[in-house]
Length: 136
Image (cartoon, rainbow, N blue to C red):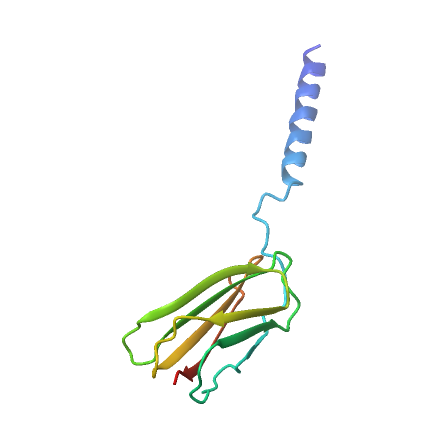
């Protein structure tokens, strides 16, 4: 009887160890996705001629859209080194083409618009861009 109990215990212990090993035990690897590719209108890196508003911005995701979409952060500030921010927005999107209007631009001012697009599926997948514009 002792032998049967010991064999049963040994069999139970062995199956428990095998079951625990088959679960993987590690963290889930981050999802594979294409690096973000984005175009903006006005174009990234451009300097626009002075103009009257409205100051429209189109952000287009040209890579495959991440499964959970993207977060688009836009900031506009004076381009004088003072970091005086007058416009900011942050939205989550699942559409490839996204239109924005920058408001609050001070008159007769050189400005810097910065765009940051972050995958909501893989936080390390980020695209950054900017352009300069001036108000009349």
